[in-house]
Image (cartoon, rainbow, N blue to C red; front, top):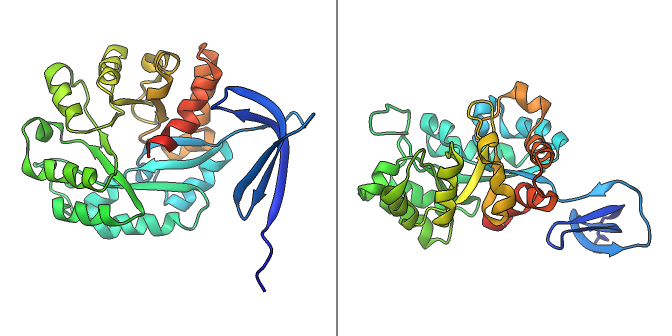
Length: 291
């Protein structure tokens, strides 16, 4: 006999980010998934909304394994991350990435790992492993690998380095996004970088730089982590280009993660006058639609 589905409900004020409205209702959950959202005449004052997504983070920088990172992050409303495992890949290669994926499976938080594009980080680095175009392609064949992680070797893109271009091509052939890393790149160089099919960047330090990238179709990941902090320069873009912005931490040390995560950027953006639903779109929706 088949067992009956596990059904539960939660009542409150439903925050509908797409329709940009809030209304009383009940969320019906069956087997861990939302089965139905039912409007009601009244409901408790608790707000029910999608969880927050860190659109670019290196879990290793927290000095925690993914399952422990999740234990700290979920209390701040984080339900998913887009994670580049290049730090462990630089030490252990593909086995390190597989370790991260296996440990992440112990947690209900959704970790979306990418294939690290730059191992070693540069030609002058002596790392513990090398991921060439063939191995990156093999990683991208794994359905658990969702995208090609940040292409830090932007000079390689600009100079048509065969290994770099083969990695980008492998992602495109499999229908997977390519994340960018192009600090201070502007003008003709930026145009060529974007034309290679690179769709995000988290390295903008100024409003003007980020705006130029957005104009070329590159989505702006507004970064505020333990190391780099670009929120104050970039937050006006959330209201101006809500479809092109996401929030990320890049690197989040454990002492900072205990205090807060993406929720802090949501609060700060709203306090600075950014439209509520544009902020929630950046924090909850855009990363899901992109990846």
